[in-house]
Length: 464
Image 1 (spheres, rainbow, N blue to C red):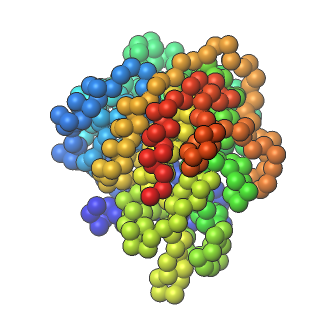
Image 2 (image 1 turned 45 degrees about the vertical axis):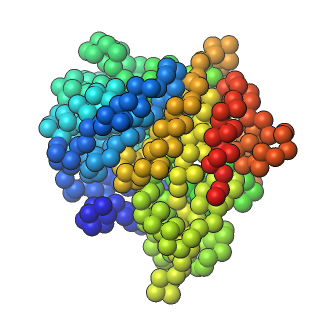
């Protein structure tokens, strides 16, 4: 990547004391790039004949693959062979329902992205953001502002030639739970009226700590609930996995699998095909007290988000170790006498976590954010292979639940020992496949037969 882009992408994530509390990864990225220009139209690379041929070979019933494209990231390498939904990130929703800076939505660059996506058979949604419980409440508790927002978003979708809208309102208060559902119901109706068949997606939390998100009601009206399956670690934490595959005594019960199973429990298996697991194409680099794991962040030290391409360079330079439960590589080194610990994804970890979405029977997986890998051919080759092998998901109305509560509000913070470890699941992903007992067959989520194909795929992806 160009040096200027690399510097912007190395987002300095400040500690909670400096930020005045936790802020989301999406919010941090927007704030870090507030003055960055939107990429140029001539940087958009359309699908190649090879990508189109791969996509043509896809059958029906495969996964939904979604990715966020931040306006400051040049889309020079998009996995068009696998991508189904591209979220243009973003415009902000103001308190009065007006829209803020759309960073060129509707302009030449955005139209070029939409053209390229449509050529590949993918759809483009306009993502809109509002962050923090109080700010979201200010909008939702004002009926006039809410209706203004709906009207403005629908107008922007239509005028910009988009295929839908993505709602990224984060930090929802439990007291505004029903108002969020009402907002989505009204937005769905307005979208259907203005542009039948348009797509409504939502960015939703990995853990619903306060029971604020009515997964089953939201999934009734939205087409996709994109689980932001990252930020299990950050500037507010000691060095640890950013997106652990499974819970463990070392890192606590909260994990990607826990999140998926929580959504299936409280969103209903009948909505399984609408649940998409978001995965991070980034990790964290902490200044630490030493190389020990678990590590301790250096008091007063810095930390940074390191993106997928940079992480691979660090792993190549320093080597890496593998955390089995988290399915995450990590490394450490000294720079000027200061220790660094880096926890990030690699090709193996991404494939294992995407494959878990298949195993658990949900609708697909996705990424924050596109091109953070700088066009890693191995990564997208493996993702394409997984997409080709995916068997698809059929909803099961018999497993529907009418319970409105999510399971995230009755437990301790991640990292604490507790009794809410997710149900036992097939151990085939991390097994040696040698004892004949590791069965990745039907799970508690009702995903049905997982199949020999995935067992073979995961065996191939075992640590080299």
